[in-house]
Image (cartoon, rainbow, N blue to C red; front, side, top):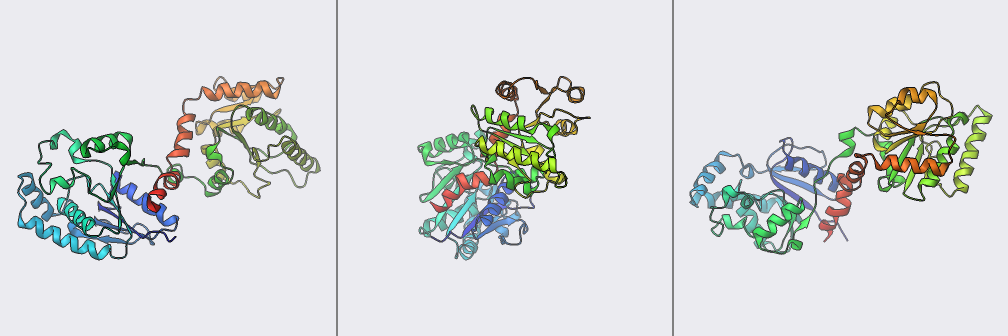
Length: 406
């Protein structure tokens, strides 16, 4: 089944700054990334991606002088010839732009009053082209605002934004907006789909692509606890204890350990130790739970290491010997919770601000202490929730793409 050709419509598009404009751009980029042919139709804006065409229809701009004059007339409930002439002009241009489009996604225009000739032109097009599919993406609605309650909801063109248009699928950005629209339209809330806004976590956190690829490959966004152990593979780092702790943690929650560094290829003892750690992991049936980035052929540079610190939930550092403990400083800079050995150099740095591992205790006891420490971290649940549910990639695959195919 071929993917639908899509047009996204709004009053304006980037580089115009606004919440809807940012969301429109994110939607268009995700659609392109997933193989959809998409273009933007707006009253103002410029090309923001070389493979996403943008068509400017000046009459669709909510701030155009002509629209402002007509808006002043509509405020007095006057629907003049100018209104109908502008509506016809916009309709003609939309007809040309939608000729080779299967799905039209309309942001805010079918529930807001900022350019009612554009709204009327779209309503007419929808009514006269019933074979195409339409989605009204509702970030806001005029008639939820008490200021506009006195408007003539049942008179044209105000009635276009006060009731649902047949054949249009309405999408609200939150359950609250869904509730408001269902009340306005007098329909069951279930008839209005909720698709939340998202965030570009890669750009916002300036994340390294290789670090993100590791998280995707090993499904780490869906783990309860992802622990980072940034070290070379040498015996004094006590990596076997980290593996045993990870095994115990997995009896209660989904936990993964990432070990960043390689063994020393020129050191026979280091290579022997690495092989023994892999044997321990494999015998413990923890191959997907203990990740040696060296084994994956990944060299960790500064950019990737920084991103791993940002993406992981905790530093696990059970080293038996250290001169100082740089990973504690790196974790502190990015607010990463720390569970580390209770050896003097680490206690000197961590003081009362970290969770200490008593190396005399067994892995089960240490895992229990880590879980209690983890449960006291107020920011981890929100962090996990955003990465699981509110990145644009997850929203697109879970919420948006089913609408495009439906």
